[in-house]
Image (cartoon, rainbow, N blue to C red):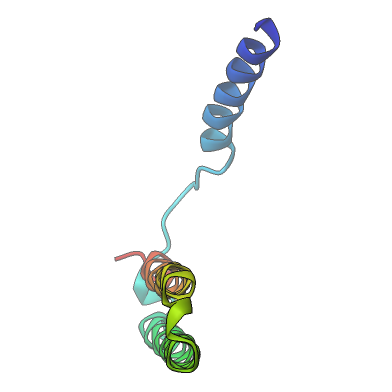
Length: 104
């Protein structure tokens, strides 16, 4: 019990110390990098294209598996939904990173 409490205190201390360690002195403006918006749009476009291809391949494989063996629908459907959610989360991460990069 004491070990868990000590681990909790240390992890919270590291969490708060990391914020100060990674703090920036100043914020670069978008004017300093005129291609920031273009690179953000390019990154989002590539992420969306890759995510769409991944989701299409996942759905195709799952529907083909269900069509070949309808009894396996329950075992295929849930992992397919989880896979689609993970693919979509990667696209959303790219979206967030792109907009953090240009500091809107």
